[in-house]
Amino acid sequence: MTSNRFCVFCGNLPDKKTREHILPQWLLELTGDPKRVVNFGTNFENGRTIRFDWSNFCVPACEICNTEYSNLESRAKPYVLKLLARDSLTSIEYVDFMDWMDKVRVGLWIQYHFIQGNPTNIQPSFHINTRIGQKDRMIAIYPLEGDGVGLNALGAESLIFHSQPSCMGLRINNILIMNMSSDFLFSGRCGFPFPKSCFTMLDGENPHMMHTSDFSVTRKIKHPLIRKQIFKPSIHLYQPIMSKSEDKRFQSGFLGDVSIFDSYLAKHTLSPYPSGKGILYFQHLDRVEPLYDINQPIEFESCTGIHSKPMYTLVQQIYEFQNFIYKKGKFLAEERELERNHEKRTKLLLKWNNNVIAHYSKRKNS
Image (cartoon, rainbow, N blue to C red; front, side, top):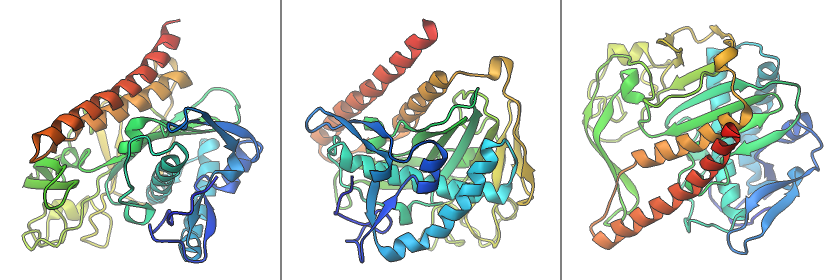
């Protein structure tokens, strides 16, 4: 199923239109029959369950855009094969893998926007090109018991994900990957600049634009990087990413960085300085470990005993973190009625997720 509205990568009308598999053909073949028919949630326009085969889960793309991302797709395959075998990737390979997860997450958001009838009544204002490696991001990789074969996009059908594609899960055979990305999600706790004031205006001269001010920087790492409990994964990586700015106050060209050279940021970002892209941080149970060597192999940690969780519990956690990130947002409006409507909308979106969370919680208690 495709839509002919715009290219998933650049957002323009497709030039020499091609079909882009957000979840690539090699991944479909790795996880079963590429033509298997699966459920993709509900079409909120007609209430029907959306069912079609994985091989037709496509979006339009410009030929040149599709070609540009083919190298990333080809690199992602050996990464996935190594993860399925519980082999190590280097720090810089995980950075590259996070780029692929950004592509998958934003691509799924756009695809579900089409196939579910735009239930939250939004018009995508960004596309894959403008979201890869642009915001704080993390991945948590969980081993699953057994040798099951299958592919699931988890949380991609939720109404919160429709409004804010900041958290989802991807089950690939015997691993589950939770991926999160959002503005200033943990930059401050990595010692990076962060705004004490951050809100989005719903109206005014630039509606839906984020406003940030009163930046601070501690240059200290705080444990844990996200102040919400997360089940222990085998791989638990965070990458703070600074946003570009043309404001002359920020001399490095990145929001919140007022100096031409900052020794802490130089040490904790990828070269060449200033890149704005942080090194990876491994979140352990008792500490945070910055990974300075980009060629350092990152081994799978054991998740046994009390740390071994069934898949339904891990899926529940995805919806809980969707709620967590969504509730961190602050929205204001010059028209009070707009604020009230947004508050009502927020309650409805959270209620939808809470019903899903309750469903998985009952399984735990049964």
